[in-house]
Image (cartoon, rainbow, N blue to C red; front, side, top):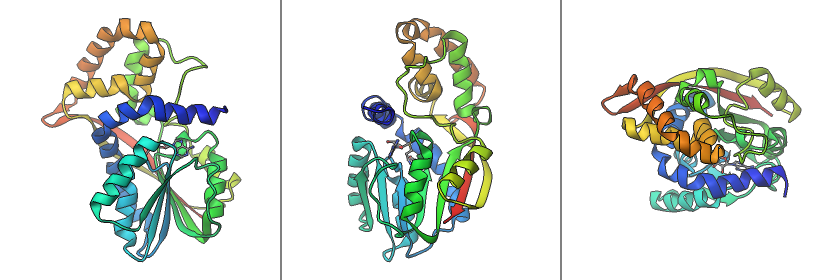
Length: 284
Ligand SMILES: C[S@@+](CC[C@H](N)C(=O)[O-])C[C@H]1O[C@@H](n2cnc3c(N)ncnc32)[C@H](O)[C@@H]1O
């Protein structure tokens, strides 16, 4: 068992039920950013595309519509339960040029010089060794092919996650060194210099886009759902889960503080908070 197996187990054993429950929020927020990124990434009809850490495969279906019947999309993810849903929805959509496989993006045996695009929306930040995964992606790209990634910027630039984390930390300790976690974490690629260094180490010398994208996202379709979401998912959910009994004991106070704060940005159709990502593109 290595660290990466632990992360993969965390996705399969801990996160699946929570992600399934709040998929409309998580994928909805992802789509806010990925829909905006398609113009910049300029994926073309006929392209062969690999989507790493594809989750439920929504972006694979989006991309399949862009590349059309001459192109193809391969979605790779380490969580079987997400891929079961991805396969079912692909079949229901009638799209025939998308395939999915279970595997670790760092070590999966990919064809060499094959893809026009390696794409990832919020996937790479969870790989234990991003450089290994990017090296694998680099090998799989054709010369001139492009790596297209969407990653979260800093927690401070993402009140959609940071607000609830700060509240949880008012009442509970941060997760310890042995916390069960889903990987380096959502903000592990927030630093531009680090990302450029990792891409360079993986062989991507030519970074052609590094663009900040800000958008308000919905963290719950009601105040109640927004609080439930933050208690179960993301950095605040991890703090509460890892605090075990103390987490349960303090939950009423955490819940009350979250409700008070998030009521301030409650609209008719839900709670909205600012979010911020990087759109990154590099050529082989
Ligand atoms: C935050 S989710 C993003 C999912 C999807 N791209 C989206 O935007 O909705 C991160 C995904 O990465 C996957 N993942 C984590 N580590 C991985 C690895 N080493 N190899 C492949 N997939 C991995 C998880 O199973 C999860 O589906």
